[in-house]
Picture (cartoon, rainbow, N blue to C red):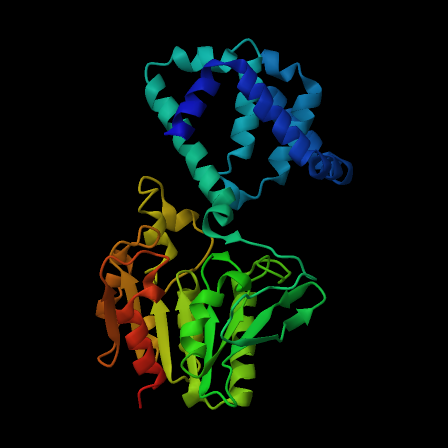
Length: 376
């Protein structure tokens, strides 16, 4: 509603348009000017096209049109819903004696036109900025040291290094005993980092298992571009490290929230003792549709973040935990996965559990002990 209100105000007041225009100019100027220098001919052709198509008042602003022409050439065809170019062109028209606003207000279907423009704007925002909605990294500093007070475990670090620009930090939490029974490969959610996971790993170390936690690029001390294929590859490397020390029958693959999609992907082609998914989403499209049901989410979503395509292909026993009061990944998301489970799999409901406290529930801790075999 705030977005709708702000956009409505911008359509009636020229100053916000000027602010938007200035913001884009500052943000994109280096890239656009570089493009103008390298591809002057393309920009000139676009300039002539825009000059012919624009209202007289706008076409008189030649420096602005050159800038817009470069924008026009920079926008890839697959970003047809990008709101960058519409906003800049609309801002220029709004500045030119409110030509654009007067033109729309004189149309018989002006409300429909406004609605369509707003719809395109929302689609563009979602397409261009979905990473900011999906992923909320908490960087820690590559040289910083995590502090775990009163911890009932030991911790060491074994980073996975692809090259100088891509490094995945891995923390190996281990029980304070002479030997461990196995290892839990743990993939955390879309926020936080290794330092925020300590309270979650103790249920494993207290029951004689190591717990290895990997941070994604941009999270904690990990560096590199956030790319799902790279994350899947790093997960495979982490599994290889685990099976170098333990047999597949001693490895448990665990995922929480967003991490369930990494865990389920790994488990489709790697053997393990068990797979545990806490608060799994069905897929990212179905989760986004809960909020943006009115836009073509399937067409605009860039990422294949899913559990529904993986669950039935996992050979190891799968256990799903989900709280009924989860407002981040609704309980219904994992319920949709139930028909895809195999006969040996389990779905455990945590009554009144939220997105952040399932691991503290006695039903959860008792079930984890059984899976780990601590009572055997």
